[in-house]
Amino acid sequence: MIKIPTRLLVVASFLILLAAAVIYGLPYFYVVPILNYHSVNPVLYSDTPAVSQEVFAKQMEFIHRRGYRVISLDEYFRQRRAGKRLRNALVITLDDGYEDNYLHAFPVLRKYHFPATIFVIIKHLNKPRFLKSEQIREMEKENISFGSHTINHT
Image (tube, rainbow, N blue to C red; front, side, top):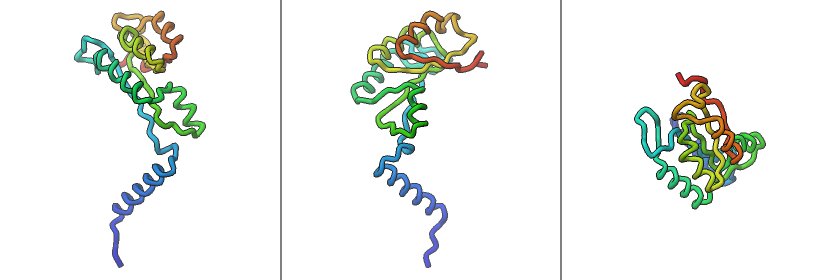
């Protein structure tokens, strides 16, 4: 009798399960990408993960051209709770609530009618380099939602 190592059995079982998921299209095996950004700025600060507005615009154009269905984070959770298949979908989020989210990311998101969720640092609202209340109100009218990232980002 041939003894097969346990680790090999586990790997083989996983691969068979993964193949079945691909063949039968089980919804819980499709991973919806969640693209996370921080700063979208032509001036890249060294203390913040950032992407230039040109690169951000090219990425959003790619997503649009390839026919991805950009859904809000809320929609993602509603669909998952309902057990729905989320094929060819992705979510866009931004952390910290930098003002460049409004100045540079928002116009591109609006151009393609892409929803997004921005997680703001509560104590930084209305401060230099961060979102202002009126900017948030304007973005909310255009399918951008907001959540709390932290109170003070310590």
